[in-house]
Length: 218
Image (cartoon, rainbow, N blue to C red; front, side):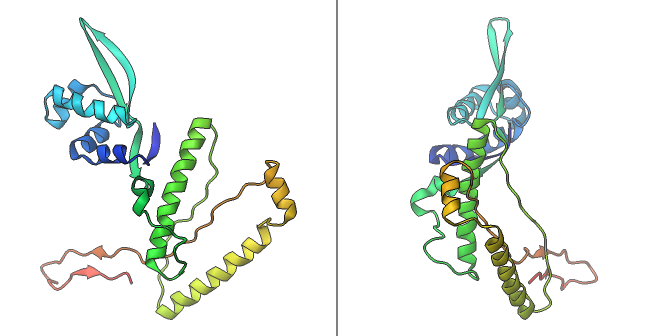
């Protein structure tokens, strides 16, 4: 079972978005039968079997084992992943394209970059799993609070300079690199550095402070 499966097929994406099938996928984080699922989701076994066949057809659930009980064979199924993410490739004709424009300060460009990252990483994970090879990735996740908008702009500028300096230091883009890559030595990597405000955290109003609404993280 994968930790995360990225769904690219539009039909599989549609199947996964059905509320009942979403619940079934959640329950099948642990292997189970149609009978067991029926009791958990409150549906007849025949109805559960209908949804299971649809999910299995799109590769979202997989057969773990078959158990013989008298004249009946019970199929034990499991979700193909612990969680799922729908790739922008499922909406290929209207998916955002980061090459349409380039603006480091545009939230829409950030979304386009994130969209591309989901699509490319999903394909890399699938390829690595099929080849039974590890996939080398690296990510940094953190939060930073700026006192002023000027500080935020200065940070972005310095970050851009620092990243450019590191790229200039380690990027092998000369003729020798192209020869090395064609010979199977070098490997291109995608680099994305993202910075965006944290989501605002709702604050529950207390009896002594009814005016409290939400914490501003801007």
